Length: 211
Image 1 (cartoon, rainbow, N blue to C red):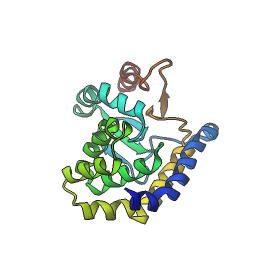
Image 2: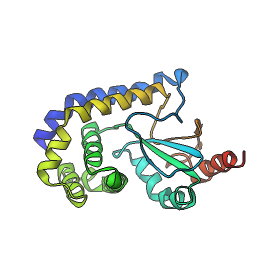
Image 3: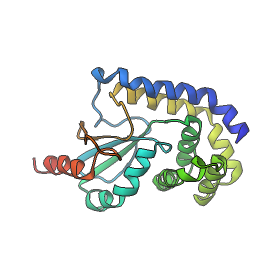
Image 4: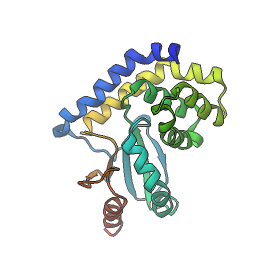
């Protein structure tokens, strides 16, 4: 992944700095329920659930592994929730940025499949594997050729968009991944090792549905 890493490393460092600076901006949070440029969403329910996460975040991967299917079945498939996913690259930022680029190039219909596949693959490259091989395998599985993946990862407009989304996360007061907001209210589960628990998220959703 030398050529890809070389190309994106400087911008990835900038994106990481932007995302990290979110901890300094909690006091100036904006409405997280408003539609934002680059939102990827599923479902059409009356309650909006926004997740800020990264494909290289191990806690995000744990949440997805433990909760995604149950959450999707209970709320998205039943049109109770509009689920919005917003990207925040976390270290290694070059891998996260490349992963998000590949997911978007795969198309809206395959975006979530690619994001989840990269999360599930973390062990492959975190224990000595080459993240390039993982991203290309997943991209190929989504129908992209190696040439398309190379072009996609290097796309300057896509990289600029990632910068913008990281800034938006900072302005929303996001201070970690994964972060979940239910109709604009942040959900916190102290002591949880995999982010906000599904029970806490469900309680907030159900309360909104009952209004």
